[in-house]
Amino acid sequence: MKRTQIQITDKQYSYLKKISSEKNISLAEVVREAISSYSSSVAIIDYDSKIKDALSLIGKYKSGKKDISIKHDDYIEKELEEENKSDK
Image (cartoon, rainbow, N blue to C red; front, side):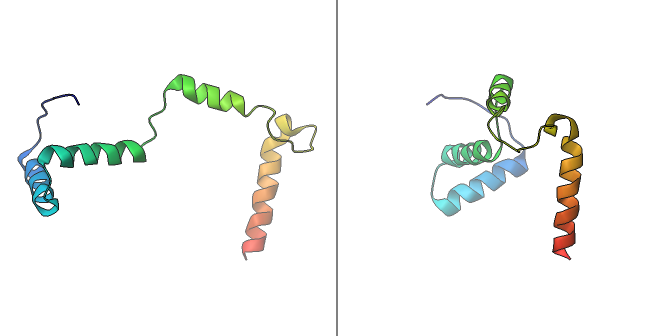
């Protein structure tokens, strides 16, 4: 583990102390849990990974349509209209 110092507001400190007391764990453990929770809920993906993931989709799925790259908006609009009709 790395040792670090942070500055927080009085209100944040009071909140962390309350949680630490309720859970009977150290203030540092509360901060570690908060960071773990935050990092798992926020996608932190670097740009290169995003590009790699996007490129990996090319040619992966087949629509059976020859003009999908040109008329994709038309096809999506048609599907959404049909979906809205079936919801009524």
